[in-house]
Amino acid sequence: MMGPAGAHPLGVKIEITLEEKHKADKIKRQERTALKAQQLAEEQTGACQYHRSCKWTNEVLEAPVYYPSIEEFQDPLAYIRSIQGEAAQYGICKIVPPLLPAVPGGMVLNQCMVPGASCLFKFTARTQELKTVLWQSWNDGDFIENTRKYTIGQYEAMANEYIKRKFGTTGVLPPRMVEVEYWRQREMPPVNGKYDWVDYGNDVEGSAFTDHASDPLGSTKWNLKVLPYERESLLTHLDTAIPGVSDPMLYIGMLFATFAWHVEDHYLYSINYHHLGAPKTWYGVPASDAEGFEDVLRQHVYHDAMRQSRENGCPESDVDDMAMATVLNKTTVFSPRLLMEKGVKVVRMVQYAGEYVVTFPRAYHSGFSHGFNCGEAVNFAIRDWLPYGADCIARYARLKRWPLFNHEEMLSQATMSWLQHNDKIQQNPNTPGRTMHVSTIMKGTLNVLT
Image (cartoon, rainbow, N blue to C red; front, top):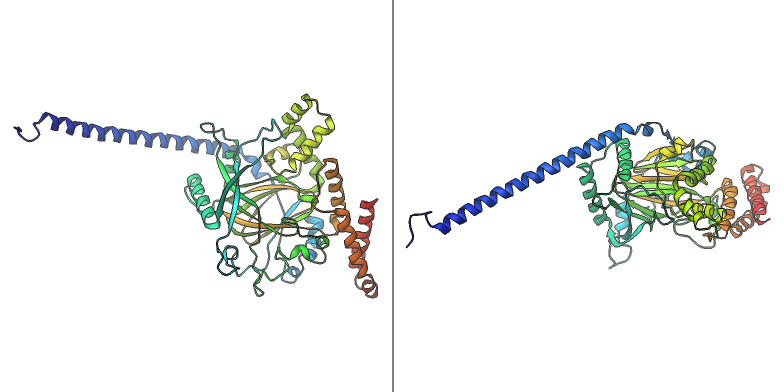
């Protein structure tokens, strides 16, 4: 028979056990909250200390910015030639166009071109660890291939979740603040043996420029599907289109997604358009300081890997070739602070949506994204590139690296093409620039072939 309410021994025991459990759970939650608060405080203290120590970011030379008029904007290669004398001294420059597209890049990527086909543009990203690579072997900086395909929407959602974890918001922050935080993240030790990581959709074939005939920007020669095939560009004489060289590629990034230090294939010019999203920070080293940059690689970046190769019996010339071949792999990331300390000229710029960046022949450059974005890039070549192209072919031969196209054949085709117009040029005395162009190409061809 049951006694008074609450008097049953079993009932009392159950009531006490539940109460104790709730109490214990509350204590655990409080402990977890306190631990998170402590970790957050330590993280913020570390960030404050690091930011105060990064005075070098206030001393980086800014790359030049150009604002062409509507008239100057009519011919992209002519305009780039007009600023080349000044801008090439910095290695990179920014061009703010007087026109903007009417059709957004994201709409272009996802529009259906084939009836019944999927409208979702998909791409594969590569995983990048955010760490300082010590380069104790030649493979230390290699990317890890991520086989997962993203749609633009899936990648944007992932990128926004990541930036929320880092900064508490997807809102755009001051570029210099993001820059310092980027280098702090790269210098942080691993947590539980693991580094932080990001995904980067680089070298994605395609274009986000519209083909709509009345689009203010897409209908101009600044459409990157058009620019490399302008008559003044030597790439018009390639036998076949090359993705990423004569045909543009897309670069879809997130916070801290990185494009490593590199020069363009064949030391070509490149032009990059920022279609949408958060800004990018760029660093550039002009061709005049390219050898100084490579000396820093040998002496301060790859020195452990080079020493190991020497100890393994590799001849010195082979060791140097390994270093120069490694930087061509586009996996080398290190702070411009090192270059500044060693007297190498390095410049910086921040590229926003709607802006172009031009890199000049043999200009090393690198950078990173401030959040979700999409850019597009392609190469081109005008007459002042000729000696750089010849030098690059000589380096490829020394490194036993296959060129992407036959340099001599392209120059021969260019010369023949221009000679076919020679009669018209001679009949028009008002075209000295074009005559000089023919002469320059012919001299460049003879220099390479001999």
